[in-house]
Image (cartoon, rainbow, N blue to C red; front, side, top):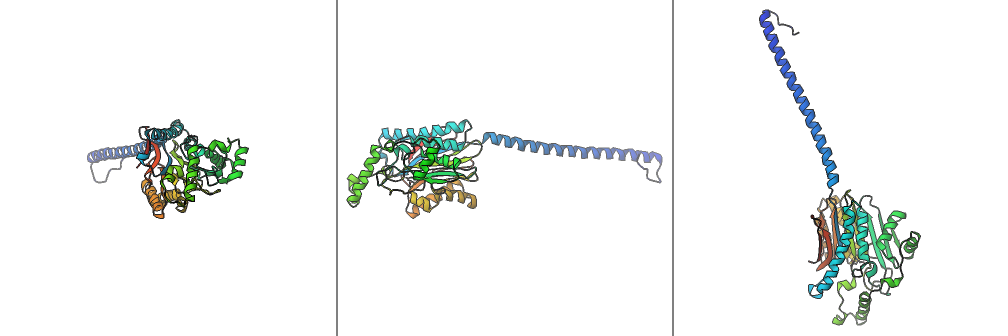
Length: 370
Ligand code: ASP
C-alpha cells in the first residue's frame, strides 16, 4: 500500500494514492512493453542474420571462365569452319567444368576437368596439341592452385604425361612439393598410376610444320619472307580455367606446350605460382597466357591478387593494370580472372584471345576477337 502524505484528508489521500497507483501501473506496463518489443526486435534481427547467412550459403554464386590462348588473331585468316571448331573446343571445356560446379562440385575439380578437355583437343597448345621445342620434342608445363588453402601443384618439362594438369594436381595433393619437373615428375606420375603415353601421341602435323618454318626462317636470317609467316597460334598458346564453387572456393588451372622452338628445358610462366597461375579465396583466381617471360617478370597473376588485397582495387582494375604493365615491358598476352563474388575479367593486349565464360543465365559465351 502506498504511504499517504501527512496533513491530507483520507479521502484526498486515497484518491491521490489511487491515481498514483494507476500511473505507476501504466508506467511499468509501458516499460514492460518496451522491454518485450526490444527483445523481440533483437530476436528478429538475429533470426534475419541467421537466415541471411543460410541463404547466402545456398545462393553463393558459381562461376567459370576458360581461355585457350591469346595472340594476333585476324578474322580474315580464320575460316568459318575453323572458328566453329575453336568455339566448340571452348564450349567443351566450359561444359566439363560447369557440370561439376552445378552439381556442387569443387572449383579444383571443375578447373582440372575444363583444362583436361583442352589438353585432349589438338587445336590448343597443351597436352595433345602441344608445340615442339627446338629439339623437336614436346615439353609441357601445367599448374593448379587451391584458393582455400593456397596449396598448389605444378609440373614442368614433362614429355609423356597425357594430361599434365592432373599430374600437377597430384603433386599438390600427394607430394610434399609444389613444382616437379622432367624425369622426376614422370617417375612420380608412374608411382601414382598417371596415364603416360608415347611421345608420338603429341605429334600434330601443323605444330611440326610450324617448327620447320621457324627453323627455315632463322636460317634465312629472319628476313621476313612471307613463306616463313607464322601466326601466334603456330608459335604459342596456353589453356586455362578459373572457377568459383558453391562453397566460395576459388581455383585456377593452366596448361601449355610453351613456345615453338623454345630451348630444351625452358620453363614458362604457367607452372610458376604467381606468374601464370594463382588463386586465393581472399581475392581472386587468375590464369594467364602470352609471353611467359614477361608474365614471370611481372609476377602477373599474383600482382592481380595483391592489388586487390593491399590496394583495394577491383578485379577489373587490377587485371587491366597488370596487362598494361606487361605491355609496357614489351610483352603481349591476356588473362582470365574471377573474384570471390563471382565477378569476372578477361583483359588482353593482343588482337584476340580464345575465351569463354558462363553468363548469369547459365549460357555459354565464347569469344575470340577483340
Ligand atoms: N605463356 C606460355 C608460355 O610462355 C605461352 C602462351 O601462353 O602463349 O609458355
